[in-house]
Amino acid sequence: MTHLLRRPETGAFAAFLLTYLFFALATPGTGFVSLNGTAGWLNLAAELGIVAIPVGLLMISGEFDLSIGSTVGAASMILALGTNQFGAPTWPMIGLALLAGAVIGLANGLAVVKTKLPSFIVTLATNFIVIGATMGLSRLIANVTSSSIFASDSAKLAFASRLGQANISILWWALVAYIGYRVLAKSSFGNWIYATGGNEDAARAAGVPVERVKIMLFVATGVCAALVGILQGIQWNSGNATYGMGYVFQAPIVVVIGGVLLTGGYGSVVGIVFGTALFGVISSGIFYTGWNTDWIQLFLGLLLAVAVLANNYVRRLALTAR
Amino acid sequence: MSNTLMELRNVDKFFGSTKALRDVSMAVQPGKILCLLGDNGAGKSTLIKVLSGYHQPTRGKIWFEGQETRFSGPREARQRGIATVHQNVGSIPLMSVGRNFFLGAEPVRGRWPFHSIDTQKANAIAVEQMQKFGLTRVTDGDQLVGTMSGGERQVLAIGRAMYFGAKMLILDEPTSALGVKEASIVLKMMRIARRNGAGIVFITHNARHAMSVGDDFCVLIQGEVAARFKRDEKSREDVLNLMAGGEDMTELEDDLEQID
Ligand SMILES: Nc1ncnc2c1ncn2[C@@H]1O[C@H](COP(=O)(O)OP(=O)(O)OP(=O)(O)O)[C@@H](O)[C@H]1O
Ligand SMILES: [Mg+2]
Image (cartoon, rainbow over all chains, first blue to last red; front, side, top):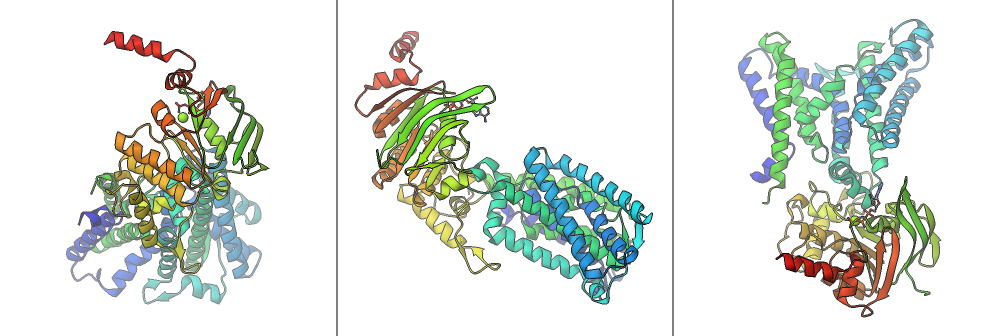
């Protein structure tokens, strides 16, 4: 029992279950628990989930990335300008958008590793630089900051298909989560992520290439943010520099709710997935209750506060003798 | 001379204007324990960070196994058989015994990308290696290192270095925070490693520990080698005095006794 309590995902799972039951009981007959209702909250969670996984791994390694928001927007604009203004084929532009995400991540990683400045501030700067550059360049090129996307049918199939109400983003989320889980829990690289966040000096002394670990995680985060930009762009048939701004804080919030320690070194992908699912359930459940959606923020804020306290407690529990 | 494991020749290490090491030359022999003595701030930790690839020397040369060498970092040094247990750092509290033991050299099974760390194997070996030296309290490789005592962590770190077949073992004050029993376990481990042919660099403030295992001694004072001698060449009093930076410790001890 205490063994279970010590696991990083237990709290998130319990919170998810309680919240789900709450909304299920509070909204009888509204279809919240139906297949469509379930697809609804999964849709809301999926795209956030795709960025939350790498952001979570990054936080376990002891770093933050607040530049994800602008990367989402930049990727969607690259796709829009490419397919619309230049009439370029879709797939190469998708490749270019992902590459841009990787480059932004690489820049973040190199800047953090070389300057040794807090990644919080470095990536906050990147966030403004990227959104500014996206808007400025879009205006220069096409005199717009948002633009339509003309995606090929195969791209629409991959990024905008629907099965009933369920969005294909859910599959992408599952894929990213599976990869994240394999990496963090099973691979040597995952061991290095925990070690880097748990005690950077000790990790370095043990031969862990901590700089490389961080840079690779920043790159993965940039690529996943770009993937979200592509998904949103193709689903909504348009690109916009301001897409994704909501994720800047939502992603770290669901990661912490998922049981990742703010100080790094502890957490799990399963926990992050439940933290994100919880977000989806709240955001969607509120609609079914008919309450004002303003309450979502309050809910999230409270959950975050509780989660931070609970995580600290779990950490202490984990460190007390058995 | 031909089988010298590692040699420093006229090594300087400066941090800005701090001259942590000045013109240090020394040799580590296989199957011998070299004790590095010196007061706080004498440069001992800096010296072993140079030996272990953590720092590059500002000036001077390092020879390893008969070749002039420049380690790109701790990883390269470790790959070449130099294992270091640093003062105060060495383990990750929120990770398990098994994962700590194999950090940087994880055993994996299965094929990429579906490989995974062989946790069972890692845990079993880690526990076995610690029990081998008489640490019977640690029985579960999943136990978090943060729940172990300082002595148990030290044994974990040294056991790990020995397990990976280190040619050279560098220990920075491994016994300083330990009780009598755990300190004697650590000293025993050093003797075993020496018998297996490893060259050992042992930093300590404890003259008794140094005298009980040391073969060669090297005293650092303010970043310079102030004295070097072999076992039995000097009395325990002389060694104590040297460790205190040349001041007469017996007098100081007499003073202390008068206060009581
Ligand atoms: N990274 C660094 N940057 C600047 N100065 C340093 C650094 N590392 C060590 N020094 C300085 O070098 C000198 C030697 O320090 P070192 O840690 O090697 O001493 P030590 O002999 O290990 O002492 P102790 O017995 O207290 O562990 C000290 O003056 C210290 O302040
Ligand atoms: Mg020291």
